[in-house]
Image (cartoon, rainbow, N blue to C red):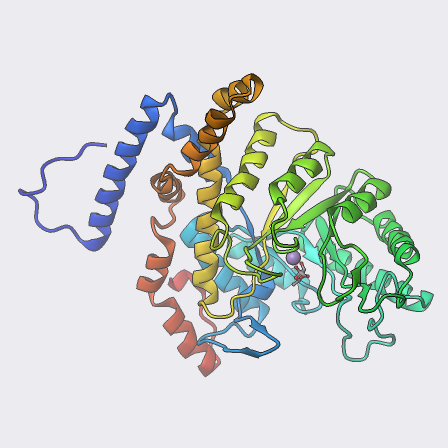
Length: 431
Ligand code: LRH
Ligand code: MN
């Protein structure tokens, strides 16, 4: 990439100026990495292969029990949600799939939805069941649980729901189901701690037995909420027990927000990787509880350390390593599309930095017991400004150098705000 003196040239358009700055930043970083014996191209290619799924439930404004502050142009239909996901994919080049939540986003015409998604260049990732709410007309309530419910009829109802979710997913071309159960208790004595787990395992066995060929079942643990004393699948150990008992197509899903403060999540990831039971992620960030904040916004070093474990597994071609990368966030105060653009960027960045670890040096320092230089080897990668590598990967994918600024410049939100309040539908091609 050649650059010449600026003074002779007329002022560049903002786009051209941004590209020129990017090229200079990229060149400078590539030169610096080369001095460290690293190839910028290798990282750009790796980032180019990274992809994450967008949750169908995060395109509208999220809220808390205290309130929700909806923004302009909220998607009203699944088709409009897909249009918004297509915008995230177009600007990042890394969000080609949607993870649906059933029945929140139950398609009324599956073939039409699948065709519409394909037109938009989108596919479907793991589908999510929901036995944490009662639906209108539902015969039996999940108030006291679903798979762990004392009443066998409620458990059967919940198993039937999972079979339905799998059928919808199969028709959409998905190949996995995520099972997060709110099952638990609020008071000591309310629920048998062992029998509730046995009942969950029994029901999961029924669901697992009906898994289509090539499908996986992800168990998602969570320490509390909505149960505030004991949650049946409370931690990674409980999730791993289930996955190991069910069979090789059952794996554990790690939602970053589902860990008590100060939990070493990268250690949990390393344990599940070692057991060939890491099925996937729900990426987000949190300060206190399941806050569902933007990934990388609170603990960016923690996110990097998780990706470090993933890159090690990738490099070692670890058995069973095929993680489903998905986002699970609640966009309470940021524009949902902008939040997702920022999230994908943060995930691409953490992945790029993890690729920059000098793995040979790290292994040598670990083996020789050089604690400080081992730690510094990780920090050198984390403290490298890898943004030009991520921007270059996006540029090569025909996406935006800076997705958030490109989205703002597109005026998409204003357009959909006008259309959706007026009842029209805005095709994403109009970005
Ligand atoms: C539970 C959870 C689960 C989803 C829900 C939307 O907290 O993380 O993954 O079903 O959020
Ligand atoms: Mn989740």
